Image (cartoon, rainbow, N blue to C red; front, top):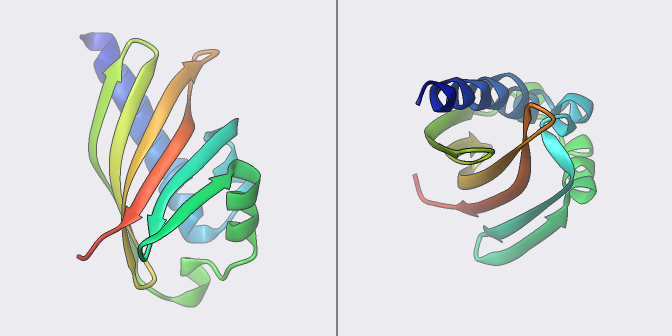
Length: 126
């Protein structure tokens, strides 16, 4: 049980220090470091299917104005983290621009480091 708590804390810190922070600031080098290179992203935005590779996602982040630079609202919230051995799922909520996203982020512990291997998202009403 203690390992699960340590792993949950490590994932939580990664989400706060890399994922949320760099979505807000737009530094794709740092943001990309929390993802496995083969990560895929799926979901829907405004009812339209969303499917991207990690490179496509990071390119989009690199070519948009960051929430920090825009002065628009941004808030990342961890709803839950479930860890089983070397796999985990985090449910998070991200408020960015006019969107509210619910996301499921699948993690895998590779070489003693937690990385996102799949991101699923959908926009929801607040």
